[in-house]
Amino acid sequence: MDIIKTEIEGVLIIEPKVFSDKRGYFFESFSQREFEQKVSETLFLQDNESKSTYGVLRGLHFQKPPFEQAKLVRVVSGKVLDVAVDIRRNSPTYGMHVSTELSGENKRQIFIPRGFAHGFVVMSEEVIFQYKCDNYYMPEYEGALLWDDPQLNIDWKLPMEDIILSDKDKKNPTL
Image (cartoon, rainbow, N blue to C red; front, side, top):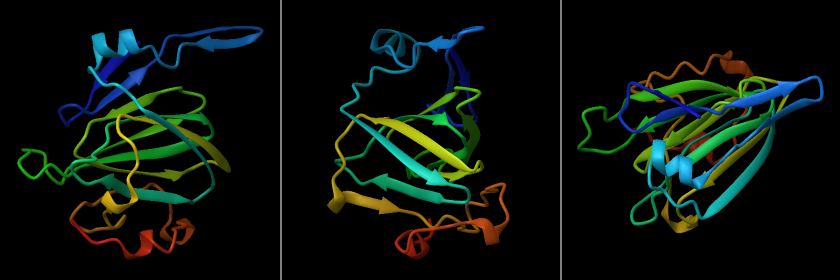
């Protein structure tokens, strides 16, 4: 795997080595050993998968201490704009975000350490989205930020009228 550093320390884009021929392709989507060598000594405890349609925006979600989560996210099919927002109060990049396109075609992954809010918007007709977490989901420690917080200034790359939100995500607080 190749590692691409982003503007925010710890948030990394991972490009797996893909072997393709006329039969299709093969790639190792995760290796604990290689991940620990090149990215972080993170032990993932839970895998999640979601299916969404065009315009669905999920986020910006996080878990509060002591149940914060690091995530390794990827798209199996379709395309999303994936966003990680630094919510570590003592960080020099507090309030800044990284966004990147993840797709079944580019097979990129993004590692988001603890202390970040995370979200994505679906840019294709449909998407299958997977993510690994290093801590269990605890509903009573769930937090979220408003997706269109002007202070965050996130360009979601879709017209506002195409954005589809859950009732819960429409009411999230600002940073």
